[in-house]
Amino acid sequence: MGFDIRIPIGYLFTIFGAMLVLFAMVTAKADMYQRSLGININLWWGAVLLIFGLLMIFAARKSQAQTQQARKADRQQGQSPAKSANQ
Image (cartoon, rainbow, N blue to C red; front, side, top):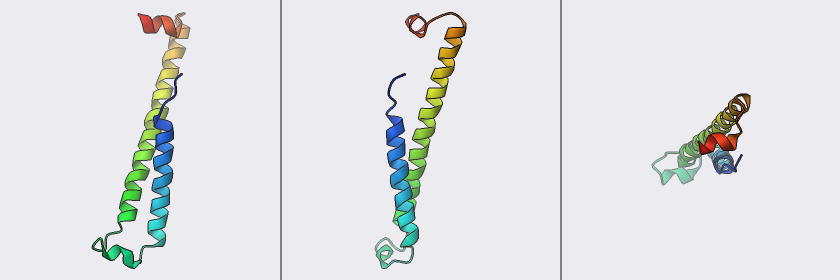
């Protein structure tokens, strides 16, 4: 099985998103949000990053599970994964 780049990207975005959401919750009443018309930009973008990261992790895990199931099916049929990929 090859390296899936979605896993580290997903974890990176999830961690940054969680940090940004926590920062936004701690500074919810700060004056810095007056520049953004009172909208807590850190909270919204943190949520976007968090959701994107979780979706990337979910997609990578789902892909890995499907690949493993396909390999099991190939083994049960008596074919090697290399042979079935070449056909």
